[in-house]
Image 1: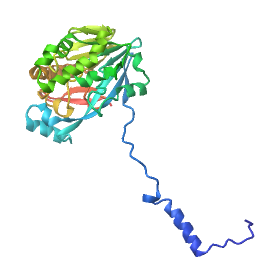
Image 2 (image 1 turned 90 degrees about the vertical axis):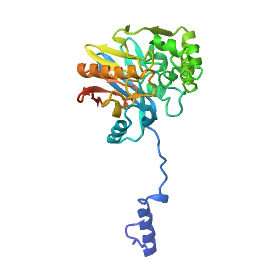
Image 3 (image 1 turned 30 degrees about the vertical axis):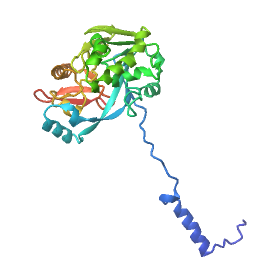
Image 4 (image 1 turned 180 degrees about the horizontal axis):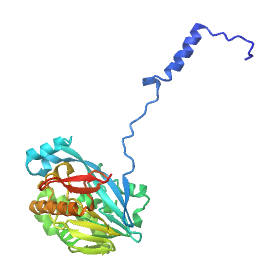
Length: 321
């Protein structure tokens, strides 16, 4: 168009043009729909303990019927949930921890895999997102043999960690892999025995299942510490490097908003309620006094932090991140 030619736009054409431009900013049917993503970022978190690199790995989150499962004074449990802006059902994290000593890759707990439904089974994908492959894992240390800690040992019919040695306290393997105990158990508990057999027997046949008893030096810088009560052989793992310590304590706590302030509260999954309660007080007191960093399987992801005293026989959790 020559600059000497007049631009002749009618009022109608100007109106159409302005409406078209204005429509670009309008929401609704004029815009392409944006579907909900419905997913989180990869679930891993790293920190150093001395020279050892620790990677917290999420296996997922699931609802927990806190008021139904927690055992203690119902009114105090309800008040603790309410004061922490929680309902009777709470979302619970499922965390595993990878310890890279520089010489070994050690995974503490293997997640649920496909045993417990769609809320679980994210461990392997998060392990890969964190830069590792399952076949690189040298050791898998199990805190105990409940399904949400062992189901991820298998990937379909294959070993999920084909080059790893699996270790657990002998008290737990003797109990959960016993056909006699399974037959004697109530119907609703038989699934725990079935999960143990399905997840561990393939490693046993491959010569890759080893047990220990009580406190034991398993690897340089990694030691088992018994914390019986939740299960017959429930075990914590202490990781130490250059004077720094991390205690990976498994299922000492299920609902942080309740059990730190009132350690007498146990959960229906505890095999021995009195022993589990005793462990709460003993472990809380130890880590608070010594200021050790702790990692919990069911603390809000990444499950890392410290414990401080909060009055007589009461404690508080201080998240690391």
